[in-house]
Amino acid sequence: MQPAPQPTLYELLEALPERLTGEILNGQLETYPRPSIRHINVGSALGGELFGPFHKGSGGPGGWWIFNEPEIRFIRNVEVAVPDLAGLRRERMPYFPEDHRLEVVPDWICEIRAPSTASRDREVKMPLYAHYGVQYVWLINPIKHTLEAYRLDAGAWVEIGRFADANRVAVPPFEAISLDLEVLWGLGGRLSCELWVTLGYCFNRESRESTRMFPWAQTTRFAPIRVIRRFPFVFPSATTAHRLGNGWLYLVLFSGDHRCCRRP
Image 1: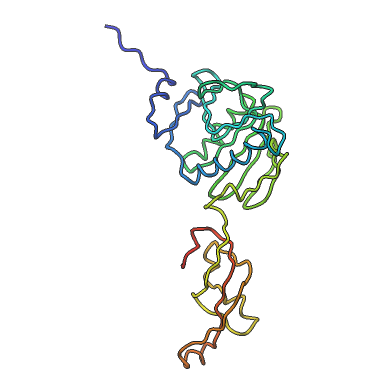
Image 2 (image 1 turned 90 degrees about the horizontal axis):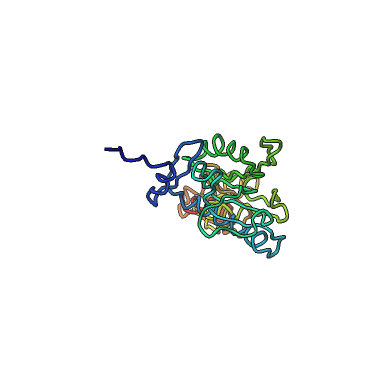
């Protein structure tokens, strides 16, 4: 009796449950869970920013296909990657395939880094992308709010730049537009919040207001932008008022992480 044939790596990849994503990298089947909502938000936001000007040619030069999580077969059923986003110039692929597989090497790839994939993206996938001739790679960290951009030069990656927080940037190969990084971070980024500050008070003396207004702000990700209005505050206890002095309550515009938009 002949032993049953062993499934190929690609057959194992296709048999993975929906909750897992699989890739075949350097002859190994790699699996990882579906990404977090923060991760998905960055991919959706970046794809949305690029789709109009580059995929549709609306407000930009067009001439690209922009895809979310395509399956790229560098070698059919042998070397398979699933980046978060990929872009191909239409002159190299005038029509896209009918199924989910791409067999044309992308011009640009973006990987959104997660704790489970961060080392793999840099140490395994970037050398693989260089080997097959991907011209540009972006690495985005949605927790640290950073974007790293690289271009291929003579088979090696050269850093274009590192960008962070809410800067507006023009990054190759999409330097035709100014990309607002704040859009990528979404609810995980920086918001404007109007808050009543009832956690403390400020002394009347102007020289002490800046240091006593928000003693808790140093331990959060808040940053006061400006005071909108202030109201006099009088302690109901004469003893306390005599000891500390009456102060002010403030309505303040903050910029900060949405997770801090609550009372500490």
